[in-house]
Length: 110
Image (cartoon, rainbow, N blue to C red; front, side, top):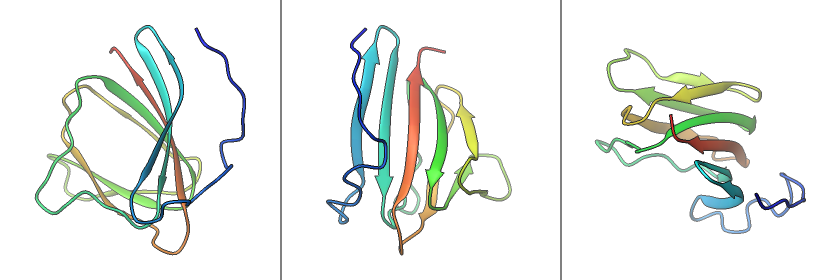
């Protein structure tokens, strides 16, 4: 496993037009990435569906996640986390357009 160091909040929002995905660590059956959102959302009518399980925690900012079959979006604040099973359809309804929303995502074989 490769070891690295840095600061999760370094160089935020350098490309505010698109979400920024930075891989922090990869190993067999595991990937950890930082995601920085600046008002982005999943396009209307589109669902995200991943092959691997994902555990995500919101470190800064605010966001709303919707899951297929749930009546209302889950509003996330710093410290809130969600485990997403493989193939679970979900979408990002909104992220804070006024400041960076920082996520830490752990992708793993579930």
